[in-house]
Image 1 (cartoon, rainbow, N blue to C red):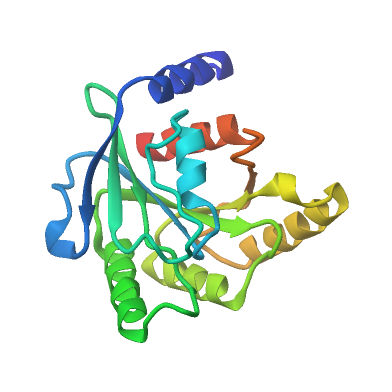
Image 2 (cartoon, helix red, strand yellow; image 1 turned 30 degrees about the vertical axis):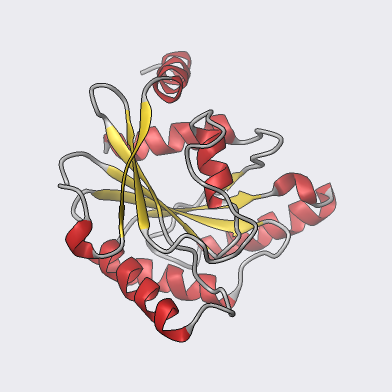
Length: 211
């Protein structure tokens, strides 16, 4: 497929039918694994919901909140008619004020889903450009490496820092990605507000789903 054809397909697909399917608070509630799934993971308040809305060109597809840790379930979204793949908004991790038992429940749900879901083709691990990679991100990357699940790092909120700072954090993230066997060597730099990097992200999602 040529680059122009790929862009046309992505634009058409993400402008077409996209709908919330269900929330899964446990593995027993997961939908049947009939189509490829692409999961979005990251620290609480990293901007997963905002990025999903920008990706799908919708304002309220994924609920956003100023309260970190609000997403407590795996949220599934159907893309395409006929259905081509699903996007999965995962619970944020690393929110210090979350009750300990709730944080443990989230962690078990995320770990079990990432390790054992046959339909899961790739994880997109979101990193806040203002903060860079934290130890807890490295823990998740190590877990993904161990699970042999292909993943790609995505910088969010790139419009909120200076160009020189963005260049520095990008270099840091690229260096970290190259230390991990399951990580894609190229990262994607995005801004939900400025809509930058969205086309590249769409291509990455479609490519992963087609594998």
